[in-house]
Image (cartoon, rainbow, N blue to C red; front, side, top):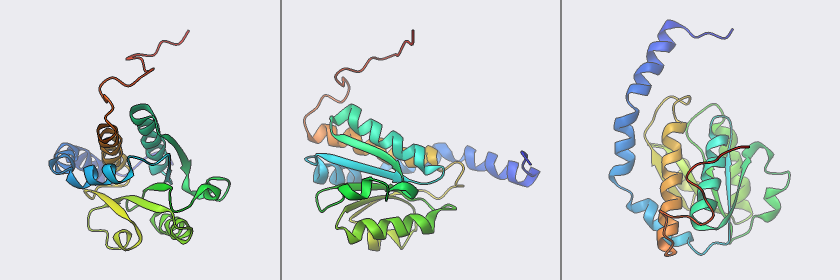
Length: 187
């Protein structure tokens, strides 16, 4: 317990080494993310959901949207969405799922179905090649396939870009968000 095999170690090192090229892939074409941002720039609220490694990425996505666009956004564990957030879902609420292929993928698909049944607008971050999520989602932002342990390094990028482009679409100076300091000092 608490260790990995040499084979797994080498695999993760190789996956980590591939991150810069995979980031370039994401950044090479952001037109789809820009279109999604324009579509949802007037939304009053967003809900971000994820499970496992993707939950903190959902939190980060919600935080970035708040900081840059001044739109209310909540990040929540997808496993707990029935304990409050689901009551907010209607045809006007964009719900962002960080839904890359991982241990929890099937459960996240089930969560997406529940939101869709309530007419929520689904925006998914999915693994490239995923044929399921595009059939269930209103919008999909793909990231290259990578080990689930490393995937958050890629999954966060479309969420950061979404926040950036929503801010730009709203005419906000995204380089100077209001009420944010460049550094935080805790006293």
